[in-house]
Image 1 (cartoon, one colour):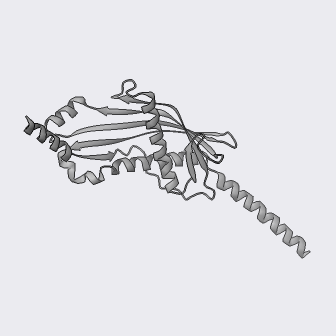
Image 2: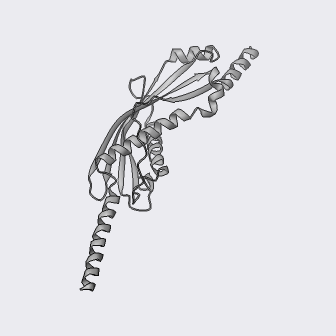
Image 3: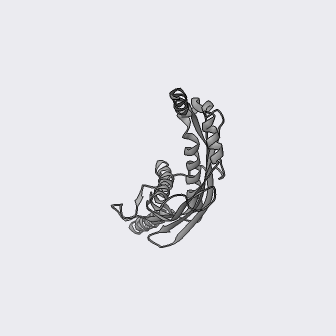
Length: 223
């Protein structure tokens, strides 16, 4: 009996997994960083998790934790690309934020209990998979003008577990990473199309006004 238990435990340790980006969103290249990088506060609205499309599968704490994970994945990509200066939860920023980003929606975990059981029974020779489908609704509020911008999207990733995937284990995170990069750039682009993140335009307009005033002063001195 101990021999079989040892074999099972070893097979679990040797099983490999890989995540794959299902690519439901069009690829969007990171835009050029704005002249002024805004600061954003984040807030979780109504967010819950489903299991195979039915009901809520997690508690309130788990739902909020998952929502914060999603917001961090999006906004950390914006920071890395120089699109925003900083972000944090409401009340945690030391300066007044330029925008508030609110997340609503749900995550559906699509899986087969029988498939997972059979995969484990076969010592992971037969693969099993889990697909996480994200239906997300974002609302971005300009805290200076109180104007609101919205973005709704769906994206997903699939994780496969199989003993033959062990060599690729060091890169198991790549599909998940690519999925969130696609999601973050798509959301930013949608907000940008609506005229959000226009702080650089204000700076540009102010610069133009200053230039006009300076030119007028030069002409007045030459007279």
